[in-house]
Image (cartoon, rainbow, N blue to C red; front, side, top):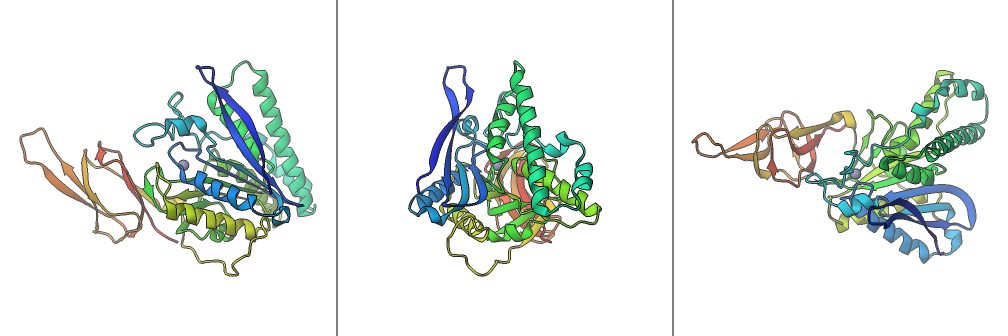
Length: 374
Ligand SMILES: [Zn+2]
């Protein structure tokens, strides 16, 4: 099976060079769902590109009846960020020009749309498949109007160039997988949204975090949030529907790295997920693995209480109890005193899952993140 490869111009640089996106699209012998997978939206988060490479290699060696539907893959989906590279020290996560987080720029139909409750009322007695089709059509029409409006304007800021291209590639998908890594050093896990814990478990990563607090401008959120709003509106009318639409953000290890175990787990997770969903004809392991679940509201980030150098700290994956040491900060001073090493204790139980790569912190800068499970 050969992918269709096409290149989309993204933006022209001051030098005259054009930054582009290259899309690899596999189409199966039979009709089916559409899965969209991108990687490296944050510039320092490289591992997902290796997962996509593995998927391309694997699918290229398979016959067309291996795939039902469409698998659309976009590696290095943010060329500007990828070339900017680094993370907390610099700006691969943020556009240096306008300061925006590349993954907080997306168009949220729920905010743009208006009357989702009215739509639910009008379609409350329709078949679920008909509701899905009508609502998707409405989202795509609204997105098209938005695109036409901004294309007609003689100005288009960078974040809109990005979001227009990336969202136009994913809007017709059923399953969206956004491959990230930590900005720092982290474990292998994923974010999921309401009602999608079963799908989240298929990836079989270290754990999964429910987005219980979100505003819809991240890529996965922007895709699924309008559908969750519709599901809630229908539920208010006594109609229980869960559409077979899902979006996940995978975090595959550390920034500025392609850690082989994280790449392998990401690849195996995506394969397992797509097989369970019937997109791939790969053999499906019968069991759905148990995976510890948490939620974003149960994540605590620790920031430096004073400036200093992090002499030691716990590694990602370390479980702590209240009173256990999290890190030791070496503090120098300009007040004629000897330097001191201060141990910061944890004020709660949980697991440390992400730590700063940077060891020199000013007061208030990020050191590590700890999570409590459900
Ligand atoms: Zn990221």
